Length: 293
Length: 313
Image 1: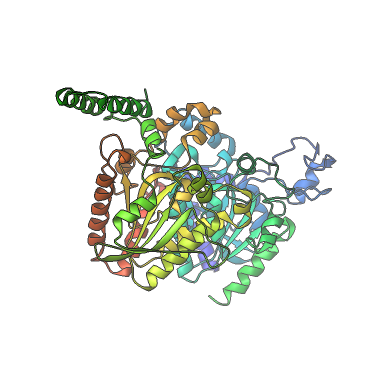
Image 2: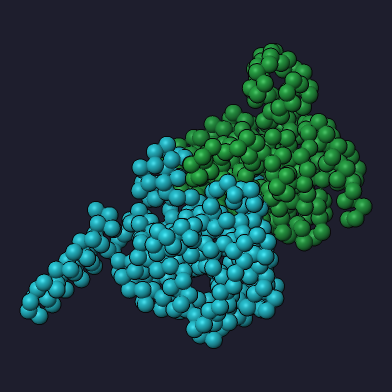
């Protein structure tokens, strides 16, 4: 395995200026969604919490255990062994197939804000020294919606895992298919599902980790097709959004509806795992399956 | 003036004919109506096609099946929970070709629509169709799906029973089938609910049907916060058969008579039957593996983006 890592390292060092600009994201400093200052109010329990402690605590509120939404880069930091991640699939450019007003500007804006190409990154990584392919959706990039580029990159990540004969772990966080790209986004659902199928036919493991929020076209495609489906506590998981359901049935939804624990009870999630134990759980599962491969 | 207003005018003119006495005047009037139809009902806008796709009189899946099949035996239930009436499925023969047909069924009246849930399937509907597809594969029958739904049902029970999982499973399993599969979009093709029956070797589409990621109303609400802009959204979404054929999302357009499928149902059914038979004939020469692989290749290519290849710099 060391050889493989070395090859990747060499290749990374050889890459041109474009690649160099992109690797910046690997060394980005930690940023957190809600709070900016040293002490902030937790949006759930309304207690004042020390943000530095929260960041050290894997972005979980120490008081109430609320799992904050996190950026893909932070997710990477708390999940994989340091310095093992090699990003793949650079250089995709999102186009505007339906000539929507303002769509290009929106994408450019998000690119600048998040320093990401698109709402999904993937690459080679090790989790407690177990090699795997890891893919992470970023809900900060246009709600992590799946357009042509995200669909293509998800498909590519499965193909890369097939090529390397590695398992794949995908963290989903998405509002669904991207409306601005219309029918092309819809077709990504079929494309990514087929990627899961091909990867699965090779006898390889696919673990999907559903994080807050996973809805719409992503739930109805690759997110729900994992061999093992994990979820973070209190994550929203569903096909239709809560607001749409409320409008349809004309009544308030019960407390905890469509949350991770609810989905576990209904039998659509294998296990709800606290973020603090997620890395251990993943590496255990990957190790258990390594013997069989 | 949209297509429905134009249609009302045609009907109005037609109703006047009976009142007229002499044959000469009647013929003149008929000619006038034909001319008006020719003029008014060609060059439809996207919104016109949305209205036609949802037209009250538009033939539903059952009417198609009755014409297509000499005999049709409907099969019920997903063997897990219950029978979903918004999807009908069964075995029939089209000109001697024995096929499995799975279709989304809208109702003609309000009562029937309530029974059919306005053709918005629950998870058990998708699980039923998957069961029938597996059955078709076992007995080497081609599969034909007729798509006509506003979308998968966004309700409380549907979520509890895993709407997302049911659709995802269908997408995956339909890709893996080793028998010829043909989808025909006969009315509304709404989002994941339509795609869950639409991952097929060939996708045919009636001229005035629509196929989109969500309804124009929903699109206008999400992007412009105003559902009254639906007609503008319909133009922007590129949901008509001609747009989709240009993008390569669908393979072939089935022509409809002037003014929409309901003006001459038999003609519509004939065209549809011919289209299906042609595709069945074309797909007959492939083996099971070839069918699966070509289907996957087709869907693998979908997407609209560029890649900046840094390796070649």
